[in-house]
Length: 153
Image 1 (cartoon, rainbow, N blue to C red):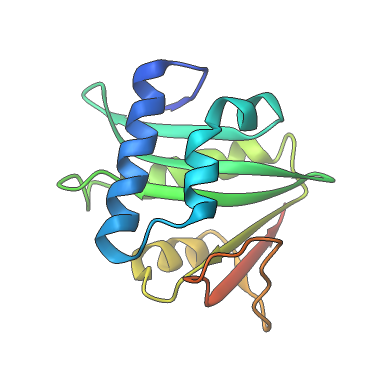
Image 2 (image 1 turned 60 degrees about the vertical axis):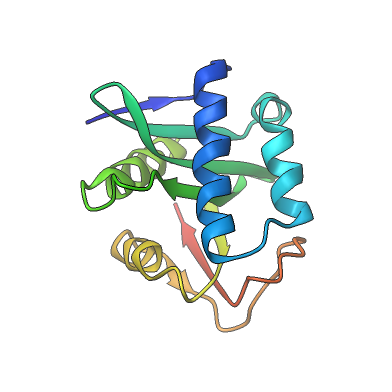
């Protein structure tokens, strides 16, 4: 398994969008906030956000985005694994890599998610994220947010 950083490659952009739309549509409704992020990937990267991929035999199978919110705070978002490639450790590998990389540019990472995302929540806790007592929207309006986490780096 190889972990790489997105650098404006069109094929990776398409893989990122495809993986994220697939899991959102499977379990939820694609919301305006989702469309906004997925439609502006390159602008987000130019503004300091990061996207990481786990490749399996050269195929992007897991991804996540660290969205730059300013003040060295990033939101971990759009964390997805390609259907049919679950349980290979790709999600854990890409998360571990992203968190290690983030130590160079972030002081805090936040997550706004849903309690139904059990595998992701397990990994968040494994890597030291702490559940916040109060749900914080962090300025986002997603109706699926019902649990939040943060990690001080």
